[in-house]
Amino acid sequence: MPPPPVTAADRGREVRQRLLRAGAALIAERGWSGVSTRAVAERAQVGPGLVHYHFASLGALLTQAALGTIEALTQEMTAMLAAAATPEEALEGVLGALDTYPGTDPTSLLFIETYLAATRDEELMRGVAAIISTAREELAGRLDDHGVPRPQETAAVLLAALDGLMLHRTAVPEPASGAVSPVLRRLLTDPGIDASTTPRRANP
Amino acid sequence: MPPPPVTAADRGREVRQRLLRAGAALIAERGWSGVSTRAVAERAQVGPGLVHYHFASLGALLTQAALGTIEALTQEMTAMLAAAATPEEALEGVLGALDTYPGTDPTSLLFIETYLAATRDEELMRGVAAIISTAREELAGRLDDHGVPRPQETAAVLLAALDGLMLHRTAVPEPASGAVSPVLRRLLTDPGIDASTTPRRANP
DNA sequence: AGACGGCTTGGGCATACGCCCAAGGCGACT
DNA sequence: AGTCGCCTTGGGCGTATGCCCAAGCCGTCT
Image (tube, rainbow over all chains, first blue to last red; front, side):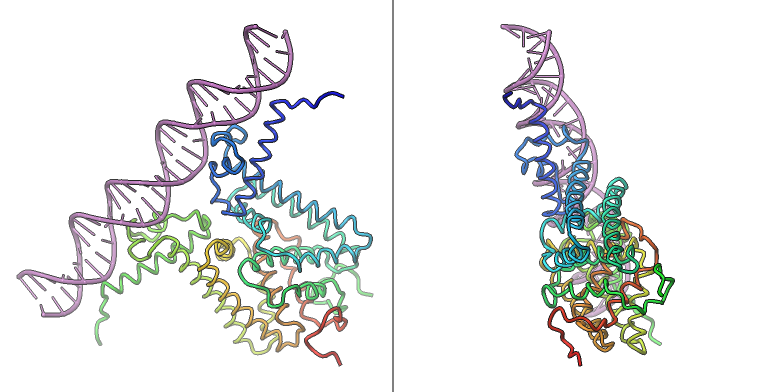
């Protein structure tokens, strides 16, 4: 067999990945604007000058690190939705995740930091919008399969509640831990009296 | 009548208020860690050294500015809830606010920036937790008047959805603007089949 | 009128930052 | 074996920051 040739470019790519992981971890720990080039290099165990060899700027590194992390997680969620045998099972997965989400884990903080940073960075904004829109479309499709009315708006509210709960759990403890999913599940039941505005589904 | 004596201490308090307002505005514009002492002083139209005369540190100024703004707004909300003639009217006000919330206004960004900064500042965390807990209790009380089941959890979800929608609207446009309140209103209707966990209200 | 005290100013110090650069290392091709 | 090219290093420059401080201003009280 051919011995695996570890070229310099290979090692370079590996170092590049270490830098991205270090950047993502530091965004969660210290906040987007609390990350410095030297801190990233130190955590990745490389020299301080390497950051600007692999990336045009610190902002470019953070953008790639954050978008990569967010995209991987949303794809994980949509894959879970697609793998579920029934729509009900898929939705149970989403609602169950809401109960177990700690809110103070690094991933949640990375999400929120990135949302906020995107407010002041147009390129980052486009990346975030694309990822979230895709996830929302996927979820809305599943909700429609389930027969939930207004799937688009319901998906938006569900995802917003997810991120909002992340945000709140960083500061305020839940009144009763693990008890929000029964509340949100009510969003998915058809009350049959939803005639306040123009309905998308015909009511026979 | 006695002429209003404008003492030096009065002018000092007025400047102090200007500094707090400038700090709050800059938190929303540039982010919590993007605010500098010189920027605050410039916006408040005072000398650069005045910040550390009125406040022990820049962090102390930002903490007071953010908590003051948040507390004023939540008190405004609870006052609106208390002033409503009927519980239904109060809830309509909350839900209507959801539809009109732009999400990109300075106040929304200030909220989210403060949540996030509180993650890394214990004193700020205590202040935020106290304010949000009070608002949630108030809202839960109104929900209970309305007969909504699980008022505590529902209030938590409503407030989380509010903040989450703020967060999302900064990045992703709503699929159909002004259409989330019918979805959330479904949270407040009793489906009557909520027997998945132990209910707080007896079901006769 | 003179002294006092709180308010305000602008500059200065030490530090940390982003980005750049000359020099070295090390494996892959001719 | 020699040359080349990519990767890596540590230091340096200019800038901005938080906090401090000596000096000045201006009403108030004795």
